[in-house]
Length: 95
Image (cartoon, rainbow, N blue to C red):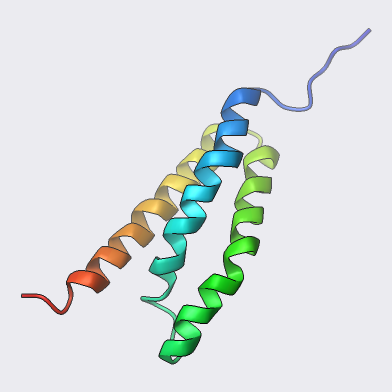
């Protein structure tokens, strides 16, 4: 019998899909408010409405990527960039 697995590194993919995808989606939400070109109401509403879609997309991508490091790098980049945008938006008025 051929016991070929669907994908490798199952535990790392579970971690990426469950933990890192959720953390990334949570960090993206306040970061999106800094670059959306809408009014204040829409800047807050749109990221909240997109949260389930973002989390689901990251969750699925963690399992569908051919190599385990690809979603890890993408999620770390998204966390870093949106975290910096949020920090920049919060400290912009101070000085």
